[in-house]
Image (cartoon, rainbow, N blue to C red; front, top):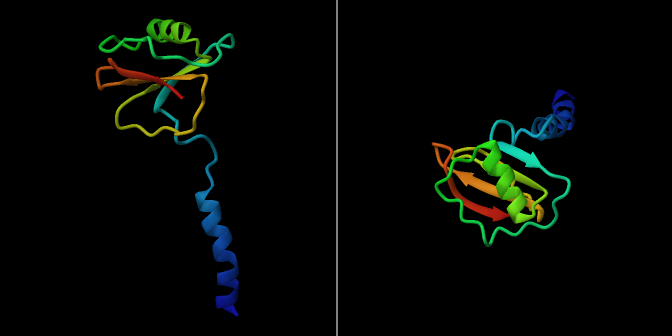
Length: 104
């Protein structure tokens, strides 16, 4: 009897443990900037490598790329891998210097 109760409750407990209560994959890992006037992102002409990814620089890159939002991706941090065609992704190194930019 006890075993059957345990076996019936165990799947629910395991599934509850896998459910996130927020966007924990992005917490503390990215900075984002959103501009409602943006549309599809085009990072082909951007060459910001080596520049510091401060707020002003991120806003400038978003505008130049025609993006609706930006996400700064720091090393050794977790982030979502969802594809957003209107988002500019900005990879930075440990000193917050831009290493690459791409859309998605």
